[in-house]
Length: 346
Length: 252
Image (cartoon, rainbow over all chains, first blue to last red; front, side):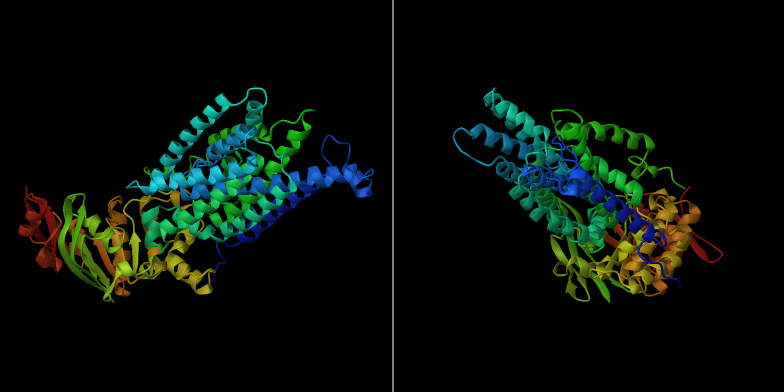
């Protein structure tokens, strides 16, 4: 009997080539991005070693390089977690924020800003903590519900998000309108310019192992996406696996949001583009989502810092790109052609 | 290898869905569970698979209580063909069947796992469908994918919940004969069925379930009598024979 290699005979090399191609394009873009920005320091200057008495060096290592790393890492993590959450919640409309990480983090950041006259708390630290806290609350809430755990989790996410959104509005209302309120609003719009080296290293420390673990569990995400009882009958400890995956995804997203603010749409749209290219198997679509997400956010961030003299918050641009892309995917069908084809079969 | 339920009582709130149900299943035999809607057929299957815990009684595989087995160990003994599957992601047929290997995989997929998948695809006649999106298959083909997945799982027992309920007549017969062939290879099959004629045609043992209790159990030709079936479904039912084979039809 002829043995086919997993999982697609002949398509395996195609997948490898595609993944390598997109990864190489992202790395090339990252390199080119070193020469992008308002300060007159082009790639040609960099290559000639023309760094003008230290100012160029400071721009390169203090501003552009950390920012490029954050864009690639956060974009990859958000898209990877989006792909993961769509899989475990069996829902193509799930985003990394579906369990309320972003609203928790937003509240945390706003709290740090409002308390700043009295208490000096790091904005990113509180954003990270409250992101984790909100999903922990969702987990506790859903654990007390009998019946379908996927639905309970999604509904608990809505409840906890609503709570933190209201609390955030209260903080905005109480905030000093001259300084604090604009700070909160800009933080919420998302921006990668805030990243400092300690934050970049912290982000790498959390995200790189996290993504490696995610990729290792890709096969089990496939099985989990079939539904709880089928997954159980195939030997998956559904409760443990789902808790681990949600914890992992939440950690990654909270880390990204605490450094880059709320960056919408990357985690929703990129996984769909990745599936179009490599198919539904999460062993592949997770990897492709991560690589494409990194390239996508880097591209958008380059636009954010060059389109206008003043920087555009990156969250606005991802939404401007993401919404039409999603509309295109909706019309082309990959969003709706999946599960709804049955019923009129045979 | 023996799968046994001992005096199972299962409650849903205050309502007893199963009351003191006992049965013993052996490998290589086809057991059909028949009963009206709400008799507890699906609940019995779900309890055997460990999805719900019995209030009283226990489920044993070779004398080991299934509540002490890990999900992985249990999946090596019991496979499931679901009644209703609402898929979301367009996996290929081969990927779906490969998922049956999960309880045997240790990190990496080995050559024997790939072979088991190809064997299973060939057994159900889907080898040319391996790269197709399983969501786009017909109802009968989809059911064959799940049976192939159970074959790849190489479990001692296969549990099916109304495996033919959405299928046309030809597909019903095809799916049932694939399942029957599995019992000849040594798998024990327990299937909840709606059609007593399918039980007469394929089953070695019939178990009649009514109101959460076993009404009768034994060889189909003895148990599926006009009297038992009329009591089971609460309508007049006759059993006739054609060409030496019994068949069931409602009284005029």
